[in-house]
Length: 222
Image (cartoon, rainbow, N blue to C red):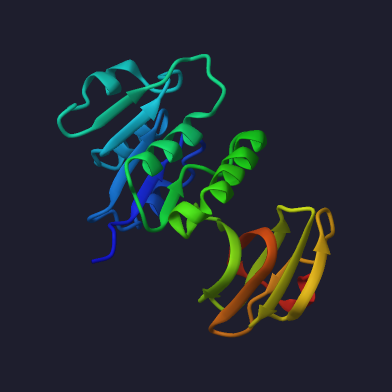
């Protein structure tokens, strides 16, 4: 039997609640990261896990948590890791498996977003797939072989997270075969989905896929 999905409410900008209400939370293991608790509560959800130092969540929300329903891990204010990193560490320690969806993890402070994505990339081997999503885009670190079903017309960039990556792309306007791309190159910027199914092989290194939720004309790309 496949593991129940894990959905993490991070402590960043929640973005559109209209989008958040379209997510299927049924049967998922829910983790709230500090300020993310207010997002979960606004959606009428009770998290299975809370992790945070309490610096960005209302004390009354913490006080109302049922400790028999929600495992609470309070972190010190002075620490060497972020609340989200501590949450991923806890998920691994508790034996969680399967894909992870992170909400409220994009937008807001750019430094937080960059570190959030790097934390996700570090845990790819633990969960197989880690996705960040909001109403505007879907972001996912990729390694090895990946079959995708992004809508035709989707604008997609692949940002190297390693000094050099080797990538093959099928189903895109600009296909590639074992292309060697150095970190900082814009070769993988603004591709466009052209087929109903796509294949992304990252033969070496890691890339961050950023897929925008709108269609563009090919003439507007690059």
